[in-house]
Image (tube, rainbow, N blue to C red; front, side, top):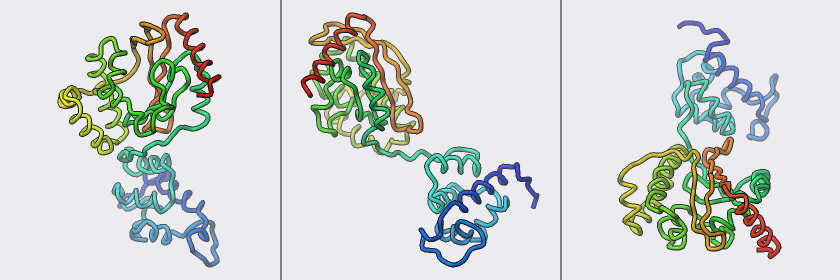
Length: 282
C-alpha cells in the first residue's frame, strides 16, 4: 500500500476526524474511565458510528481507501457534526458534497427579519424551497399579500397563483407568470433536495388546476434571478416593480425576494400604507 503524506486528502481527512473526536466529552456519552488524552477513544467513535474499529482507525491513519457515503454519514452522526462539518467531511473523504437533505423551515432569524423591516418601500419576503412564505415585511403586506392574516399552511405562493382568483386578477400577464413560477419552483425544490416534500403539493395542484397540471408536465426548469413584475393593485393602481432574488447563506432551503418600485411616488405611497398598518397594530 502506498504511503500518503499528511497533506494528501486522506491525511487531511485523518486530521479532521481526530480533531473532532478529541473535542467530544466522554462523560456526556456515558463513557467513563481515566484517559491520557482528551475526547473519545477511536473504538468509542466506531461504536457510535456502528462501523469497524479497525476501519475507523485506518481512516484516522490516512489509509484504507475512500470511505463510502454511508460510512461518512455514520461517522458524522457519531461525532455530532454540524451540517457544514458534515459537508466538509464529504469533501475531504469523497471530493464532493453529500446528497442534499431538505430541512423544512418554520421561520427566520431575528436578524434577517430586522433586515426585511428596514426595507420600508420595498416588498420583501423569504420563501422555502416548497415556496411557503415564512417571513415578510410591511411593504409586502401592502403590495403582495397580507400573509399575517393567513394560517401558516396557506402561505404558499403556488397555491396563491393557481387557486386564488384575487391574486390572478392582480397579474398583468398571468399565463406568462404562471409558466415562469412553475419552472423556477421546480428548480428550487430540486436544488434544495425537496423533490419528495413537494409531491403532495404538486398532486393537489394538478387535481385543482388543469393549467398547473399542463405546465408541470412540460418539465421546464428556470432560474429566478431578477426582472420586472407588473401588478394591478386596488389602491396603488398599475405599478411596476423590479425584483431580485438572493440565497440565504447556509440555508439552501430559503430564498429572499426583494421588489423595488420603479416609480418614487409609488414608493412613498407604500411607505404611507405600511406606516398605517403598523399604527393600526395589524
